[in-house]
Amino acid sequence: MAPLRWGIASAGKISHDFTNAVGTLPATDHLVVAVAARKLQDAENFAAQHGIGTAHEGYEALAKNPNVDVVYIGAVNNAHYELGLLMLEHGKHVLCEKPLCLNEGQSSRLVKRAAERKLFLMEGIWSRFFPFYRQLRERIARGDLGEIREVEVEFGFVLSDIDRLRLKSLGGGTVLDLGVYTIQVCLWAVGGKAPEKVVASGITNDDGVDVEVTAELHFPGGTIARMKTSALRQLKNVAIVRGSKGSVTLHDFWCPLKLTDVDGTTREDTLPTARHPFNFMNSCGLRYEAEEIRQCIAAGRLQSTSVSHADSLTIAHIQDDIRKQIGVTFPEDTHFAI
Image (cartoon, rainbow, N blue to C red; front, side):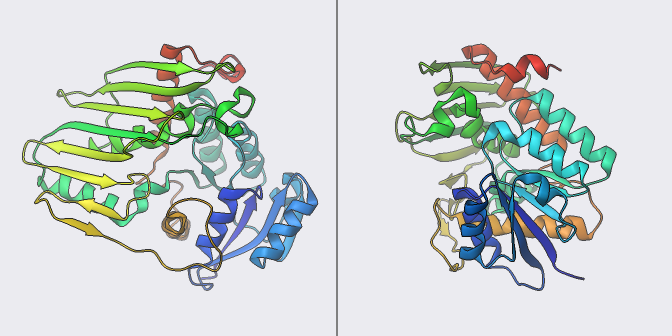
C-alpha cells in the first residue's frame, strides 16, 4: 500500500508538533506532502523546517491539492467547522484537533457531511491512542477494577494570558480547550455511556469565557465522574478511575507515560526521539493517532472505534450543557442550534 499523504492546515505550534511526530513513523506509511497557512510566508517557513514539498497560501489551495489524502486541522477552535467542511467538500479525509467544533450543532453537521461524502473524520483526541489508555480499557473490560464507581480528574495550568483560551472570538474557555480531555477520560472509563445529569459551576473572565470549571457527570447505575478545569492555576492533572476492586491512576492523563496499576505498582512508558523539539508535553504521542487513521482509511472505515462520531457528539453535548450552566455562549450557539 502507498503511504498516506498528509496535508497540514495551519502552521502553528500544534501543527508543528503533529508533523514532527508523524516524522517518527515510517515514510513507507506516512508522508506530509503539503502545508497551508493564511500567510504564504508562514507556510513556506513551516515547509522548509519540516522538509515539506508544497506550501500553500490559504486553505482552499490545500483542499484542492490532488496529492493530499487526509488533512490535519490544527487551526484555532472557531475555524474547525469551516475548515472541516472545506476539506470534506473537496474529497479529503479529516483529522481535526479537539474540540471538533464549537458546539454540538456544528459537530453534528460536520459528522453528517463526512458520512454523506463517505470520508473519514475524527476529532483529535490523541489521548485514547496512548498504550496506557488502551491498557486501562482492557483492565476495565476484564473486570480487574470491578464495577466502576467513580472517576476523578482535573486539568489546569496558568493559561489566562493565552489568546486562544481567553478570547471568545477564538472559541476560548477551559471547557473547550481542557474540558474535552477531562470529559473524554470520564467517558472512556464508563464505556462511552452518556451521563444522565451534568451539574456544573465556574468562573468567567471579562470576555465572557470560562477560566475555571467544576462539574459532576452522573451516569446510569450510579457512577459519578468529578472533573475540574482551570486556566488560573496548576492542578494535579491526573485521572483516577475507581472501581469496587481497585483503582488505576493515569498521570499527566491527557498524554500519559506513567500509570499506577490496580496492584499499586507504577509503570512508565517512553516515546521515540523526533527530529525537532516539541512545543507541548509528550507531543510525540500524536504519532499514535496518525497511525490509527492510516489503518482506518486502509480498511475503508469512516470513523475510529476509539474516537467515534458518537463519542464526539456526546462530548460536544456535555460541553454545551456545562457552558449553558455557567453562562458562556458563542454566536455559533444561535446559528447552529440543534
